[in-house]
Image (cartoon, rainbow, N blue to C red; front, side, top):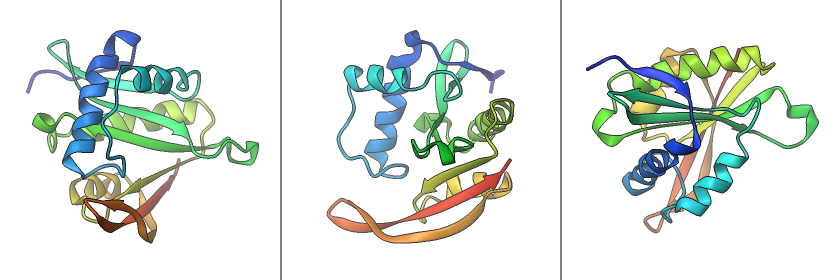
Length: 164
């Protein structure tokens, strides 16, 4: 694979971010979302990611192949130091270390922006995602049983965390 460039996302990247996010929805491995998103949704989402709540993209040959974001965990000020993570990789590039690179960069940026902890939520059956987080020092906090519905069936959601 050619060199991966990690950089802060710009509005011009929203089409690629949308495509990759919708792949994650279609593949049913990364989110409880079931309805595909559109440009309006992505614009509103992007506008909530300002300042500390950054969006990064991974780029190869000027094509965005993955993205990651630090999201608000809870709007209460008591949780200002806790960020919620999202990482999505284009289906043709999963399992190639892109997520690890994005995660490492998010952690660097998180520390610089006074986050002391990251949390994330994943499906217990998403072993690729879990192995990324476990290798990076995240621990399983617990499993919410029957947390949502996918394809008409209840699914569990695993919470993970890392103190930065």
